[in-house]
Image (cartoon, rainbow, N blue to C red):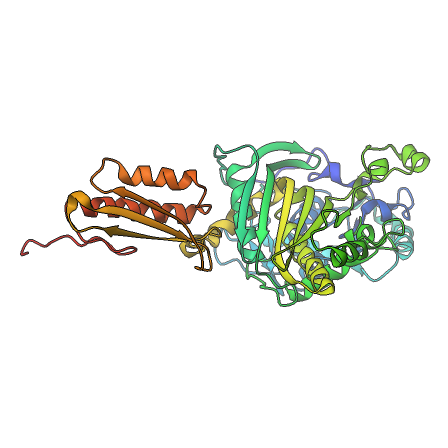
Length: 516
């Protein structure tokens, strides 16, 4: 059932710059700040101006156009970091593929990762493509964008009162009921070899334990102090997981943006401008110099937050008077720290808040590349990368996609990994039942050092439990899968002694058959 909208824009009004709703021109700025473009637009020449970070946002552009079908010209400009601009262009050029059933979303032809809500009928998608003209001005200056908008408004001024269909809205996709599980309120640790696996775990952590709170741009689900450790990812030969919404080419493009000094201010901000030229200071160079002189230097860091300018939410007047940072240019990444441990350069990056669905994978790859660059300059091997997000969040508009991504990529073998603190052997020693003991020996990950031996008589009550508690009390197990396995092995060993059965680690107990 369709409805006529009573207020427009229907979606993300608080995030858009609305000028003249009777205008027939919309501006899509991709990753460029909408405020930057708006400075070159004359009042009354456009209807709405906003950014398009992800391909999923195309749905809301289409829904807003159909709810105000005066819009017949769409100007696209700015930096296209994640392919959202290409996807929008392909929608207008190619349309969508037929859905495989009545509930599956439409897929943009030429970009299967760009999907359109099934609730928008195909004939209305065709209406938009037929009646709205997309102008690809991604390589044009903001001055040219302003001139284009003005020219269109003068050329087609008689069309402001007409619409290409009646204003209409469609139901939103049905939302999956989200349950929030009880948990610690702070500190969630994820340790993985590669960024793809870590991302799935991070999404699962937030969708399962995240608290729903109001954010600046709608509701978010968030956890506090999410710490993610990456151990093996090579940024120059990245493991591009099939579920990423970017490919290697787009990753290389992001690298360029991340390390850019952004002299032309094409984007909201780049981290490169604050790392490599923060008021004339090259912080990477200083980190390299410090670690080259003394590899254990505690002061090898880059600080991306300037309290004199970034701490206070300014008014427009204060921006000019006090040199305050505009709120949309305040960085999320605030500090990078590094130190050499056992001949490897380890690095930690601290975020005040981090969009885990839309930004973290790209952030992690770029930080890993930054880390590798420093490691090479100081002549050390690449160590682990740790990202710490004071607030790790998923925006409401990405919540369903995050849930689907986690569900579709669930595999049991993902949760079987070696504990970073070492491994253990479990065996039964002794001949007679009353003398038999369960013996657990812990070794370092490389097997060169014995870390501890734990023994208890198997005939004692709850011996597996007591051994487990002793081991946990010595902090020899850190991984949940390792802890689960240890509990299974100890329970089997206890049962074997009390039932008079043979025990072999990692093998099922052998019970006698009826004929034996």
